[in-house]
Length: 114
Length: 116
Image (cartoon, rainbow over all chains, first blue to last red; front, side, top):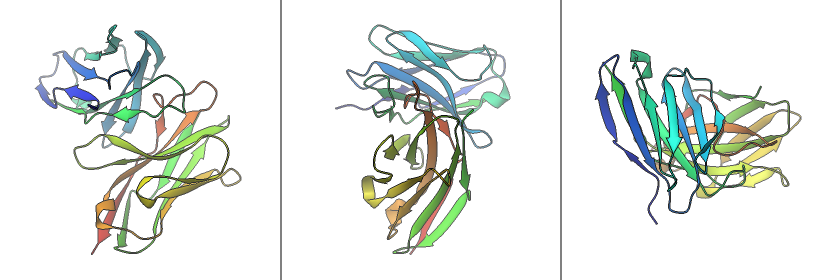
């Protein structure tokens, strides 16, 4: 079956702009999480959605937001982009919440802010 | 608060040699522990996980890890390295009280190089 699909794969934006990233989970998966990966900070949890509700949120400013649709697809939005937002953004989906259900990661969207 | 420390940002081994990647965690509640692998320009793939039960956990591609509560460690090993093992490896911890694999605290990662 198809894996987690993230679009676009690469994105270049200018400081001050906003950006929307998309994640289509594996069919049947209802939980979607987002992570930011940078060389300096490593992998950091952004937020987790389950059945259209945000269940957990990491320590990021309010410029970072997300949502999940009824078909479990998720989007994350970053407003007023800063140079430091340049990163690989990874989405992961799992069948349900709970630590025993494996999370499957997409290939990520590489965002470059110039 | 939970945290993960991976000792050594780069590890280099010869093909056929033992692979040992170190991970220590800090958690105020019983932890759930994970190892993920990331190949260049790819997402993360779960290698193995410890939740409860047997402390020696076997994963994919011949990797295994042992949960040692007294040492707060979860080191990853593989008896014989293969060229295809070259990748970056991440140790992660989750809160066992309501935690999920969707909300993980990751270490900084260890890049494994395998020399022919």
